[in-house]
Image 1 (cartoon, each protein chain N blue to C red):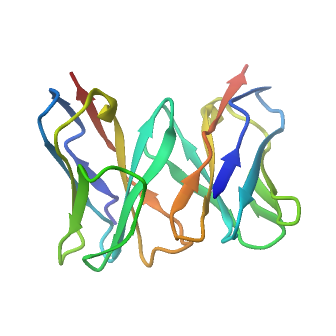
Image 2: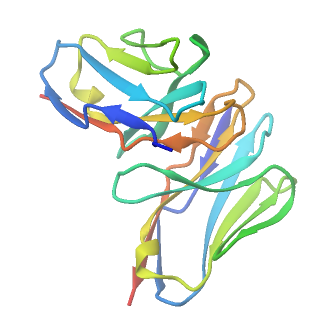
Length: 113
Length: 109
C-alpha cells in the first residue's frame, strides 16, 4: 500500500507570492490533516478535512486555506507569503480521524525569501 | 487550553534504557500518542495510550497516568538508529491534535 505522498518536496518563493501544496493520502483514508513545523513553534495543527468537509481548523490567519477532493486528495494554499511562513508543511491521513493513528507524508519544505 | 511539555534533549548510550517524559495540562483528555521523527522527515506513530497503564510494542513502551497528567516513552536496548526526535501528542476538546515541542534523543556508542 502506497504511503502518503506530498508534492512538491521543496520549493522557494518570495514574499507576497502564493503557494499550493498537494497531499495524496493512503488509499481508503478519508481524513487528511495538515501541520506546520518550525524550529521555534514545533508542530502546529492547521486544519483537518474528512470526506471533503473541513472538520477542524487551527489558529492560523485566513491566508492559510485548504480543500479536499472527492478522491480524498487534499491541497493547502498560502497566499501573500511572509518570511515567517518558511516551514516544513506536513500532511497526515487516517481512516477515520479522531484518535486514530496518523500516517504522515515526508512534507513540503517551503522557503520564503 | 492545552499544552504538552517535554524535555528538549536527552542523551543515552547504545544498549541502555532511556525514558522520555511528557506532562500535559488539558481541560479534556482524549488519549496520548507518541511519534518518532528522524531529521525533519515524516513522523511515524509509535504508540497510543487511552487509559492509564503501560502499552508495550517491542523495544518501546509507553505509560500514562491521567490523574497526574503524565506520560513517558521508554526505549530499551537503544540502537544508534533510535537517535531522533520524539513527540507526544494529544487531542484537545476542540478535536485539534496538539504536539509537544519534541525531545531530541542522541544515542552515543
